[in-house]
Image 1: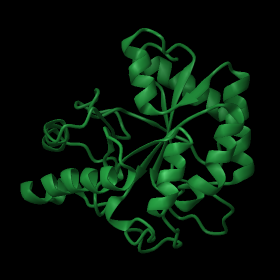
Image 2 (image 1 turned 180 degrees about the vertical axis):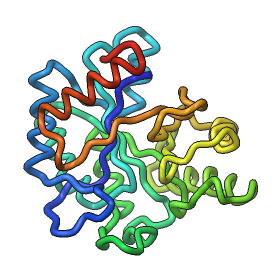
Image 3 (image 1 turned 60 degrees about the vertical axis):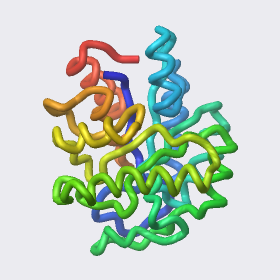
Length: 232
């Protein structure tokens, strides 16, 4: 299992009930720590290609779920400073909108089509996070197929480039959902937690939050090594 970190939002905040926000200062410190450890942050697409050719040593996947505006405004400039890339998973049916699925959390704006194009041009991978951020395990087969296929169609039309990656909303990746993502033609998919479905279409990721300084980051890296028998 490759080592992949999971972020959501990078901005200053007062209220973060779902623990999805990292302050810009903390994020910069985390990227600096990766560099000091001899690691290079890359998109999942780049990481898997390197894995296939045996050239992934020293790489760590960086992912950002939901496609918040602060990815373009705050995260990308920091990533560029260190020569890093990342994957952002966009909710295709809400481009330019806000996180309406988080009813009890603060409103966060989502990237527009133009912002998605700009981050893609900056070397970031844009991938799918469904059409509506739906609970896929609760969707019937028709809705599941639509969330997977229509989101990809929207993003590819907006970007004029192929979209090959996917992330499950809420990290929910049962056997049916994994099979559907594979059948929809994606090259890989990211989950959150390890499970019996872990693999290329349910990549486990390591959550990173605002409390994660160098000691906690190191502990999480060691945990990954102990669980999967290696660390990049």
